[in-house]
Image 1 (cartoon, rainbow, N blue to C red):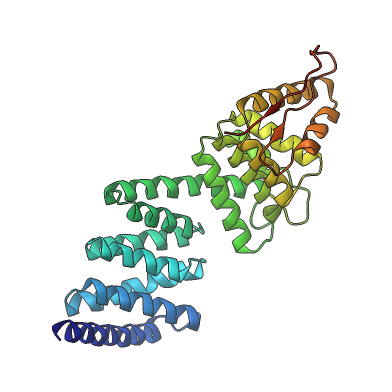
Image 2 (image 1 turned 60 degrees about the horizontal axis):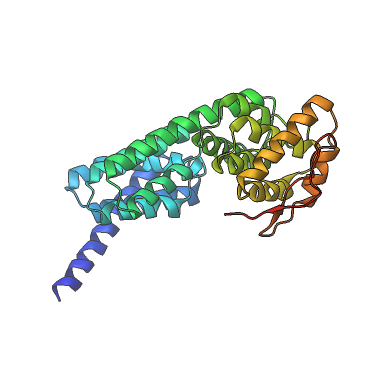
Length: 312
């Protein structure tokens, strides 16, 4: 019975907060998109009701949070992901000040035009795994810094005023570039891959697949320069989109001997300027569990036996 009264009281409290926030929204944010403003109000109300604080703090936070959440949603943040992050914070017994910090971070990312969802995902993952929140926050800080570096690379490659594109295309590319930087790939190697589609009609959207492929290869332990050369060579052979990513997935799961053989092929291609050998290897790659070794160079003597590398 007491639990029922408790839930009823929380619902009434949430309703009161929602009405208060709705009043604040109408007074302070008349130009906000109505649907997003409604979602922002709902998230703020549920968060305030679940954390609980005094009436004066509720009123103050209602004004601040509404602005911050509204900015985040206008920048493309997923409201469900944001709400899930706040819910997990509460379940972990975190204080309401951590919600304040999360909203500050979301607004800061929004004002910089950086994607918010990758940071929310990282926080959710850390909380789900029981990682200490101080460590979760540190990881989120590092990711935010990489997103900033990635955004500068993308902006330098494809300046916004000159390169019109949907905001989600730019944010997706920034998020993928940040992921690749997190794999330890240097900005120089990433920049080379990023610029591969610079002459296409929609370069920001087209750049996603080579960047993702670079990340697959680097995460598998291939040196960053070799990974970049691999992506560039495959791109020049006409591999695009999912086809290019699939080649990267297979290459990332291959035996180290295959990586060595591919490195030798790329070296010979750079010296001799002949891409036939690499083209033959690409054509031999199948999205299956066995990846054939590339054929040996014409100048290399072999015993005539063939071999295959089986992925780990």
